[in-house]
Amino acid sequence: MNSVIDRIPGVYVPYIDRSRDGENPRRLTLLHKQKGGLVCLLSRGMEEVAFDKPIEDAFLLTLYGPKEVKIAYQSEITLSERKLPDGSSYLVVNERDATSDKIKPKRIPFARKDYFLSEFVQPGKLDGKLDSLIEIANERLTVILESIADSGFIRGTHSKKVKENGVKYDEVGAALFEEVAGLFHEEKDSVPVRKHDFYALDVGLKRFMSKPKSKLDTLKGYAQVFGYVLPAISLLPACAPEYIAAELKSRYEKRFSVVDNEKERAAIALSEFALANPKLLAGVKRGYSDLKAFGSLQMSLVQLGLTYGACELTPWLGIPMVLGSAMSGATIVRNAVRSGGTDFSGVTASLLNKLLINNLRKKGM
Image (cartoon, rainbow, N blue to C red; front, side):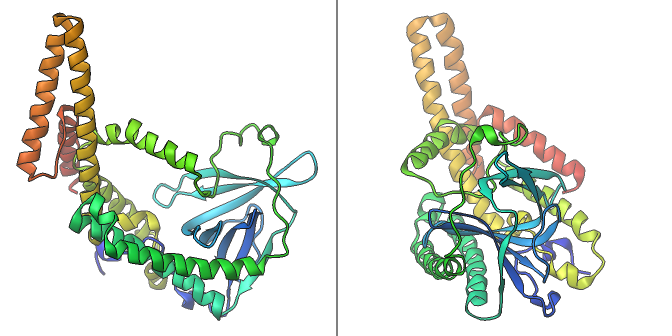
């Protein structure tokens, strides 16, 4: 039997073995339509999607425009109905985490009818376009991470190969959007549900599908990155990618061991495990290292500013601040030199790094 590392998929969006379906086609079910955008579920088998019935090996398609097409894999989801006072309803989607088996509920904040509108995806144009999107989605992740591994985070994400792949992805997505929009063109837009009409337990749930970002959302995203994401990364240990990959392999092996049928084993490809693949891990590590370096630089500048301000106020506060800044700076420089420019950890991150490495050694990972 091959080792578990040979079974870890090298793709992010898994391919589903069509031979498992027999004569059963794939089914495209409309979950939500609003302002020309659609959210659909791609499932397998003859049976229609129904409430409170688990759906395995499905794909979520968000199509908010020709250049806003995304696909995501769902190992298992269950749709639950919540009735509204006016007789309509909204959906709560329960996602099963593939690695922990925990259920994560999310809501679709739009009113819907009492039935699901769906169409069979027969072999032909639409079927081929769906396969093309899965293929280019996998290729896109691989191209980006390989470019980051070769050229670093900034140059890698803006490389010629990444841009060419992005153009190809947009072309495939636009063709699929036109086809799917044509299937459900007569369906009316869904009506948003007011926040106070949601069940009390559902108000705080996240949205099930992502939506296109506005310019304001983009600015908020940048503010979040520089406000706390990069500073938080600077405090994380350098071995975090290896630790996460090791945990994923362990969980994948447990999941894999409970499947007896060899065809089922070959078909299992869970997106959560893709980043544990050595081919993709190199890009993850390089990107993480670059972001950690940016975060450490940002934190160092903030620390220097605070130290300068403390020295201006009183030497009793300034002296400890100077010593702390000097120790942190010396630790960053030492780690950078020792690692050949791949580790820019400060004092806190270095201590966490030692703890994680010892933990990995104890587990034999």
